[in-house]
Image (cartoon, helix red, strand yellow):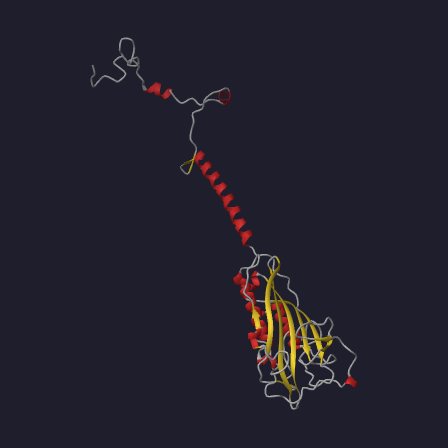
Length: 349
């Protein structure tokens, strides 16, 4: 039987006779005031007394929850920091290449004994070993750029183009040939070497650091005129990574110019064989700059006993057999270079 007043545990919740065992107890005001919460002493807590548990909160958040969140945040910070440092380490470029002056090794080639080119022909380039060569910059062959260990094919191609631009600006610019400054090529050098070339142009010295003709091809306009005939050029550019992040571009080019005396009948084909070693790193390529380590210059016909640091000074005739100086190493500048600073042309340029 069920009824609205019967609890689910049954009718007999209290004593044995069905009455509520606390029905007779009256909680008056005195009893309530006397029934305060007992706080255990330190001794009672040590001996197992139980203290009522209170949840500590900071800004409304339970301490336990806050500690867990802070711990998780610390772990994430450590992981994030490690990732950031790893990325920074991976992104930091290698050390920049050592900066230093370019070394200029120059070799003068004496004319052959009895050399006499004769009257200036209508086409002074119609004869000689370079007669069939390409004209101007077309003779500088740039191979297909190939990626290296640390440089992409695009970067290698950029390096080759920078070198080609520098070679053209210092060896084929008509203004430079006539004694002007290489304004187009100067901005391609790192600042230190730009200063080196600038100082050489202001105060030339006949040495391996501050000789302008160790860098550029130029003739004294008061004594030599560059004939209006296409310059013959034959050479190659090649790139290779010699050390980590050190891209080396070698330019090996031969130039043949027709030059004549100002106010005189003399003329000659002047041959110039240069070999450059350029070194580049990623930061230099990013800035479009070059660093030259070494330039070998073999040029003639010219005298070995004249100061050719500021201008090339072509010799328009050769010595007579009886006036020939002591025998010197005979060099074909189209194929090789001597070890010293003076040699003799093996034949007509």
